[in-house]
Image (cartoon, rainbow over all chains, first blue to last red):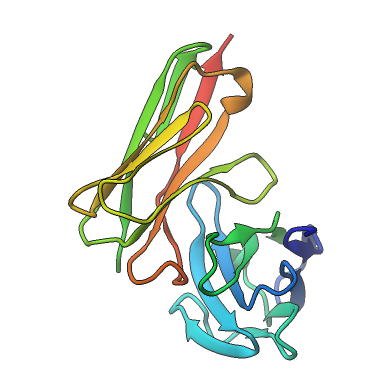
Length: 114
Length: 112
């Protein structure tokens, strides 16, 4: 069990560029969640997957955001045409449905928009 | 939407003191969780609570799931320097597999 892994840890990009983040959950965890955390706030839910199916999306997930989990293992979160307000920490978490442990979080990808 | 009100926002204490923080909600939660987050890292689970009235300890940490299902508290006894960080209460309203709603955090500072 190597924990939830996120890549990259930091991303700096110019406004208007597209960015993609990757999350590798704990192996055999069928649920994968994405959260966004801005400075001084708690994480806010964006979306989650059960296996490869995306089951819920928050209103925070505008049409510039897209998440995938094509094989039910790793997931990607893409932001198109980035804006200043997208600057945040993007956290991924995973868990096993029906298991006795709640969500385990990765260390996040910190996105900075210039 | 659902919100968690966490207090206090920050605390300044002397090493060795006990700490208490709490969280309230206007709606019922079926799971209460307490996480700690250090700078540049993701939240790390401290305690999970699944039953109303449940009182659970993890070393020097103790947390309770309120009887009304609308509140929870976390106590830390005999604080040490490594307790510094941000503590988040969190909960899920439906089942334990559900998305988590987080409070805004309590920032704990320990004075030398």
